[in-house]
Length: 182
Image (cartoon, rainbow, N blue to C red; front, side):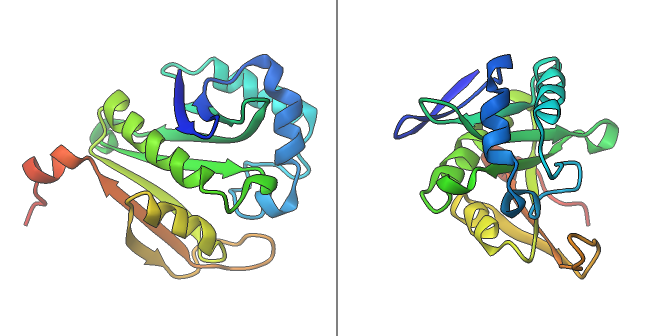
């Protein structure tokens, strides 16, 4: 899979050759502190190889690289539910610090959200953001997501207990045909 997002950047499938670039940008406390604990710190070459093995063997493929023309600079993916929870998908993403503030994450989230709606038959896509990460909340807002809820201090991360913000977006055609039960 490949989605061009402008200025030479793209969302694409991972390859085994991506390991060193992943470590280059993922082994950064400023990145990991805003992500779930499943994203390790320090981030080692072994972590990258394990991640790539898992991501490259997913069926259907759900996790992708955000890449410059030269290398992987981040990642984006969607978690899929099952059963009665099969219509929402949770989007997660990260970007290497040298690429922050350039609109790359916003373009990636916009393109990937469209792809997720089209590919996985989702009605709703959402993302969870720590209140300590206003830049990521802004990425979601620029990508057309709306604040769906705020959970007061439900997690502990890096010795702090931030609020958890949930942003969501409905599939455009679903908003017309789907209504909430009363």
